Image (cartoon, rainbow, N blue to C red; front, side, top):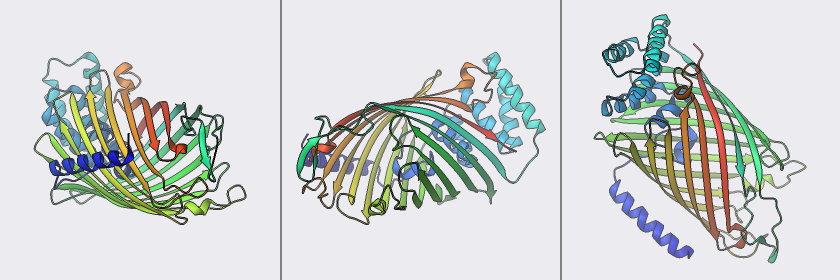
Amino acid sequence: MNLNTNRLIFVFISILLLMTTFAVSSEKNITYMQILQKPNDLDLNLKYAQQQGKMGNFKQTISTLERLNMLYPDNTEIKLYLLSVLVQVDSPEKASTIIEEMKLRRDLSSEDLETLQEIEEELKDREPGLWTFAADFSTGVIASDNVNSVSSTRFKDSSGSREAFNSPKFDRTLSGSMGLSASRPVGEESSLLINLSQTTSEQYHEADDDYQSYGFTLGLDTVFLGQSVSPYLILSKSDYQHDADSFSKMYGLGGFFSVGERNSFSYGFSYSNSKGNNNISDTTANETNASGHSINLGHDFIVNQLITTNISLGYSDTDSRVDDGNDYENYDVGFGINFAFPWAYIAVSNSMSFNDYKKADTSVNDTIRSDFTNTFDIILTKAIGDIFPGIDPNRSFFINLSYEKLFSEANIINYDYIADSFSLSFSKSFRLN
């Protein structure tokens, strides 16, 4: 497909979407960083509530689940999940009301009734507290059939000449992460979040993804002019095994609001700054020191109890210390459909991205790079408690399966490639007090 034609199609689609989502806003915060980088990749409902709960943003979790509970009053899973969160944040009045309503139902399974009784007992034993402390853990593996983005022709341009692209393609990456969060209410409609996180990554054959990373997040969830608004600050440091260490900071704002019972609009803005340390093995790391900003818009729609859809638009601009081959503008448009099946939650998405570089990278050739990528994702999430209620009665232990296929085409042969990857991960969150 011609790149100029792709860009015209993107602009046309963007105009149509902006016309239908004008006065709109964007993103729900699955995690604070994902607000701005990949908004609406998952739904604004159960997945959103799950991720916010893991981060300790229980106010957002509760408001989302309460809205879903009104839309789907017969859904037992939503009620039980809402109850488990209400117990965590010490809201005995709301929890007791839902428990008494559920006791009157005659269609509860024995497993659901047992879970209800356990939540009720836990509620009786809790004492109110100002701060809520939580921990979350996750581990997973990613297998890629083209980890180094080797071109489809197995050739690449280098310093104006063409040579073989012999980098290995297949590899696996193992990762694990843990986070500690503390949250507390601030007034009647706001909550403060402090989060510390650590991630370990190990690549099987090569060492590009061998690193330790550390993060600090400070965020505020509040309501302003009828909208849920979340300003935040994120600091991170990555220690690479065979590369220069890197540091980054990001601050921004994300928010969303609902229109009627089926439409949610979201928005986000962020500014980021990243730096790399030079060392013996990487004497040019600081050439990619960069600052950037991004803007995102999104729309979520509830079709029925089973299906939700989302649309996202994004723009970002990155400026680096060395302009050649590093400065670029990015345009994104994404579409997703989500299925809340009784046996699993499935999200399917397709996104298109256009990258326009500002100066040619003369180490490759004298052509100014321009890319188009198309990424297809399918993600399946399942609570272990749905299979083994005795192990996970509150359904807070999740298994996640995903598949991604990426098509990249560019006006430079190095960046024409196809890549597939599969991932399997497990995540669990705990209340510490």
